[in-house]
Image (cartoon, rainbow, N blue to C red; front, top):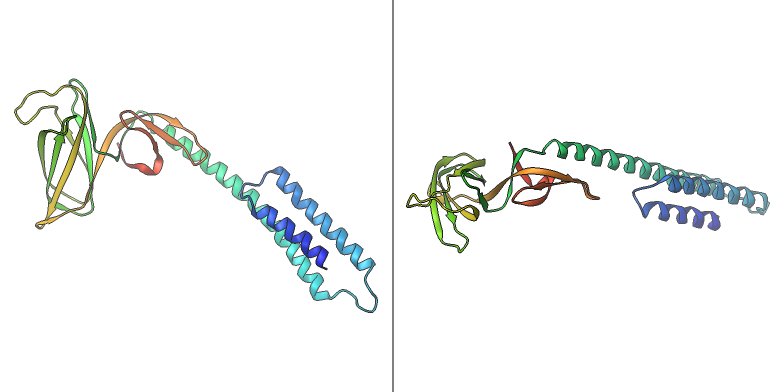
Length: 225
């Protein structure tokens, strides 16, 4: 029975090596079954009458070949599920084109005549939330008092004016968030806003292209508007 065990083990190792089984993989599973049955029949024909094959061993080998066939079928099913998931994710991503999203980042994009939008995610409610807008050189341009905010995602708009009331030129700015609750610092994450302009399919799932941010995986998006 050692020959049969080696044949089964070889088939199992091959099928476990790749989750994405193809039609060729399924065909290989059939070849393994044929090889097993031929070996079993040959050994039964040539068995020693004084030392016949043990029924328990034969049953065990049959169970193993069924396991190999089950693994082949499982691999095929997983591939089909993965393909369906990828297709569904691409369709969901395409529906985001033209929508505004928030993702991790501390960049503000100021355009002429248009306020720059940003966001913050708070781990818990805060009594006071302050946003400090910095220029390209790191200098403080404007401080915005957002007041009390609840836990979760909150957005804000910067009108493009500095603390002196002068209009700042269009371009890229950065910001920092300071949040306090009951006299204690509240953990916060700055969020960058942008508009989804495209979808990029990939082997690990679809990603979206966001103006002013770049390519983002779906799980990196914190909020959609």
